[in-house]
Image: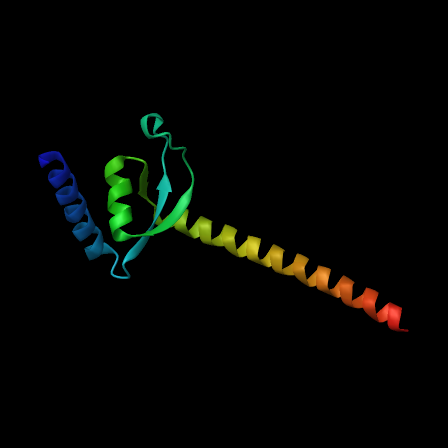
Length: 103
């Protein structure tokens, strides 16, 4: 029982540290290679502070650096723009097909 109590005490302490840094109640983490936990590096997640504390203590993730966050946001914006264009092209093509059939 002591091990479980100590674990959750560590999680609460880590969560309190994170709360001072992330007032919004969530943060972004990036996974690290951890063979014991079968985690691979490079996956970015946004989690609440309790989950962040658990992942950080498990050694499967670390906090995202400012430069990594900026690169991630640029990449996500590019993906959104590309998806938006392809969706617009698809709808435009459908519209043109329908209007050709009406004429």
